[in-house]
Image (tube, rainbow, N blue to C red; front, top):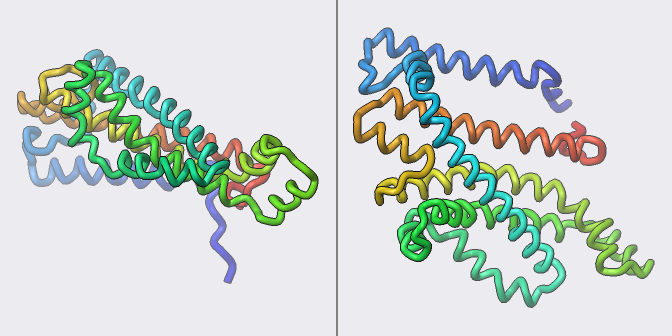
Amino acid sequence: MAEPTPPRGVGRWLAPTLAVLLALAAWQGAVWFWDIPPYLLPGPWRVLQALHADFGSLMASWWVTVRITATALALACVGGVGLATLFSLSRWLEWSLTPFAVVLQVTPVIAVAPLIMILTDSAEATVLVCAWIVAFFPLLANTLAGLRSADAGLRELFRLYGASRWQTLRFLLIPSALPYFLTGLKIAGGLSLIGAVAAEFTAGAAGRNTGLASRILEAAFRTEIPRMFAALVLVAATGVLIHLGFEALGRLLLRRWHDSERG
């Protein structure tokens, strides 16, 4: 049985765009049909009005969240890829340091955020560290899996031809790890945003003004539900943009040679 042909060109974007528009129309229709008051559930039109009315304030907070998310993701890339490379070269190093990486992965950022805030006395530093913690492990694990997935026959061929460790890493292991790294990047991109927003909630609850989470908390305290939804829409839209950006990056880097993007 032949596999279904994936949509291409406009069709690739048309289906999800129509699905989102239908969902928004259904949401707005439900609010009108049941006459739901905006302090319980505002419709998309009311949320858009709130976004327009508080555009300056919300965008300033959005930029803080985006800046911290991007910084944390960049640091996670450096740490995760660097440590994965060292692990691929030394099993002893991997066995010694893996417990620390696992501890970082399983520790909830909500639990450690107050401690980090006490140690750093800075809301931005706290949010940055928390976002880095959640973004680090997917990059480490995926890059390491990619480095280890290189074909055994090719490894042996490199060894027979006397390739140095650097040449093996550059011409065999890194190309093999690239699809895995890009998958880890897509996961870590979303997680770094989630970690940043979660830590911002902790900082906001402690009276520290940071990014979009502070606007959500502020709107919740004042029962300005449309404004709260507007901030949530910005968080969701940022996550979607991050995902789409890394999807495009993956297609750009892999479409000429890797089966995952050539199908």
